[in-house]
Length: 462
Ligand SMILES: Cc1cc2nc3c(=O)[nH]c(=O)nc-3n(C[C@H](O)[C@H](O)[C@H](O)COP(=O)(O)OP(=O)(O)OC[C@H]3O[C@@H](n4cnc5c(N)ncnc54)[C@H](O)[C@@H]3O)c2cc1C
Image (cartoon, rainbow, N blue to C red; front, top):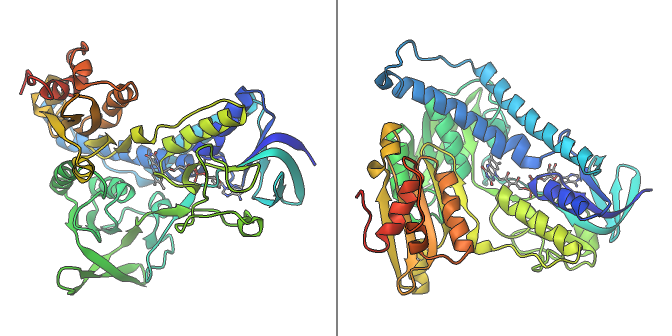
């Protein structure tokens, strides 16, 4: 039996960041991880592999569509699918290996295997029982499916199967127009698949600013993705290697079918807490199966904490990381704080979408008087030069004080540009603060400044 200050269950972005912070703050730390590699969903089957595939397929798109106009002539590259998957796997390996290195550097023990909590203060891994003053559950999430849809990870796949298909499907049906479905749908559309996205709601990307969502759908449609909205999937049948998706249109209850070589079920994720022994411990859960915590990530059981996808809040790697750091700092007696009002959300399609804070819809619901400043990337010199003029920056400010309440960007590097606004919001800045900050020319970030100017006396290049 070994004894630790903290044992963390799960080595995803929540767990590994929590472990490193605990070690930096002088605690003796171990992490239990059942996978063969560290990094959790994010590094192994989530953020990182999907971004590698988005990058590779975007390069193909650039070669096919934009090289010739820049005077770069010659045959467009063809796809070597095995090599593309190998590139993706190598990217995963570099990142998961990096976490192993950080564990060694910070003297964090990796207890290999699946852990459970027989009682507060004890963690069982295999036949070994380890003691810990504090236990942090960072067990993450798993894909959820729909009634009538049986995932086999070959023909009917979750995102995990979609990242290692045997071949590029001719016809791909994506169930669910959320972030994961649209990112992976874009990958396969660029690689030549005929992609149809079936969504229960009448708009894509629920929760996103509606104007941005409409523009986003138009852009994806231009790229070849087809959308069937307001459609309730009834089931998927598989015969041989072919699938048939049956859905009913909600407006008239009419039934339709779609044929596919591959069906991607991207209808969301649910907390993964299997095998931890939470029932026996009497752990309080929400009605959505999340572990209930207070503002310091403490559960109802003394000495047990929980963070990341396993608790409430957006299922995002950076949210899990911030909670991991804050939880560790709390255990060390500090008084950390995660600002849930300033957690950016990014979709890594091309163009990217970056959002933070309030949308027009949430402000209207709250009856909050606001002003909008917008600027199109068509007015940005760098974007025009780089064939990236589609999209715009939209900043929402308090009508009386000019304080920034939210921002939504669809366009080049939106996922990076959004952070200028995040920092501004953390400092309680007004749009004028951004507008009066000198921005280098020519950069995409000038579009953010122009949108900030548009909240006041007007943008210059619009
Ligand atoms: C396809 C896809 C793309 C995504 N892209 C993005 C993105 O671009 N940006 C973003 O912010 N988020 C993205 N996400 C979401 C992101 O991956 C998660 O929000 C994040 O990984 C959550 O981190 P976590 O630490 O809470 O849990 P996880 O990363 O899920 O890690 C939990 C770990 O705990 C381990 N574990 C569970 N139970 C036990 C046990 N009993 N014993 C031992 N080990 C256990 C699991 O094996 C797992 O490795 C994506 C997800 C998917 C599926």
